[in-house]
Length: 192
Image 1 (cartoon, rainbow, N blue to C red):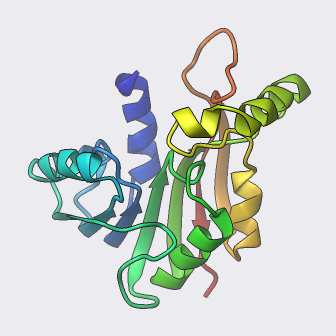
Image 2: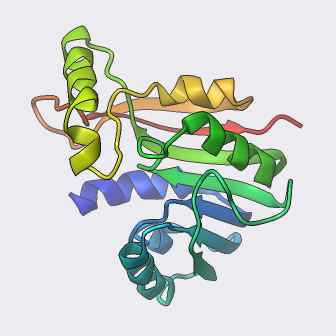
């Protein structure tokens, strides 16, 4: 699955430049895909075990990566100090999307980019119902706080970003859909 996911990671990060913050860096699998135009990456990860794995990945990255403890609703760094922010399969599990996106907007300079790859609420009514049932029962407990039914594109817009690229896709690419199959890959800008 990482082979297909790696293709999405490369597309998500292609062309990035400057100072970048990655929110919810997990085990650091994005690090190998950052282009050399990136000056440095501040990778924020709250979970200690994943943070240790990310630190190992950072040692082999083509760009400087610093892995730090932190959460999406209290990001390190000064206001308007970063060129880009990256979220990969993380906005589904933050406690409050609006708070996390406001923090990202605070940290980005005017004109800064938010690059996102997230699973989202399904378009199909039947799959949306399945997502709502999962989110109301066991899924957030067994999947680290993940919510399958979030309308992340709408949340990004409501946070004051302008989405300049948005692609809907299904991952993994199977003949059937699961509650976590619908994804979006895109770029949004903090207005100047």
